Length: 148
Image (cartoon, rainbow, N blue to C red; front, side, top):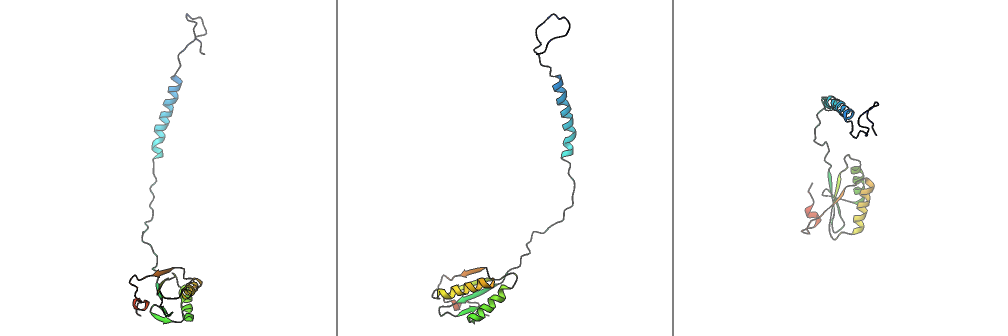
């Protein structure tokens, strides 16, 4: 508690008022500091950045139209091939960059074993992008193949 003066006083009761002068002094000093430093915080440095184009440089991958008809004949872009030739062409296609996509057109009456062998050989050759092309009309595979 704060007491009055050291000397004799008329009122010996304790002083009940809070002295706010030091607090106001500190607040004014902080206000001046913030007024001075605020413009320094928003100062920006101008930098000339290089301009970048947003067009991708991705190469379009080729696709291989591979078909198997009901009789078990295999076609590579419309050309009839036997299994050893298919393996050789898949190995050569797997070495290309970017790797081409393998589009499979398979007749609904083709044997699954032959389809599984072709997909296995494609995986071994590195042809990871394999798509199945379907024809809702049910036309035979040989009629929808592209002609060389």
